[in-house]
Length: 70
Image (tube, rainbow, N blue to C red; front, side):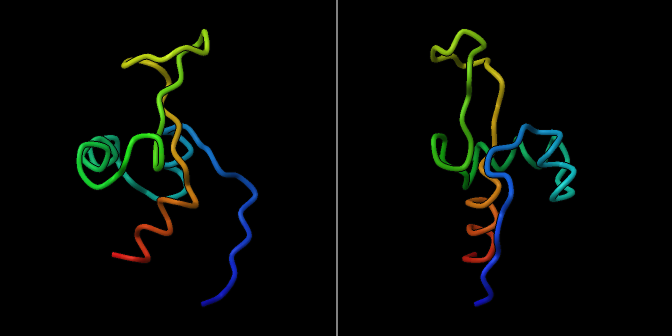
């Protein structure tokens, strides 16, 4: 397997859409499906605390790895 070097690990939804071509609807379905919160995505409140409505960040290398393994 070739070695891939990533220059970014966590991206917001716009970055994920740009890099993968996934739509907002597809991303939401994946969050409810195979992606694991805290591994493939995380929610970050603006004050640093825990929240259910914070900014969503996506771990691009782990999402790519999951796709390769499926």
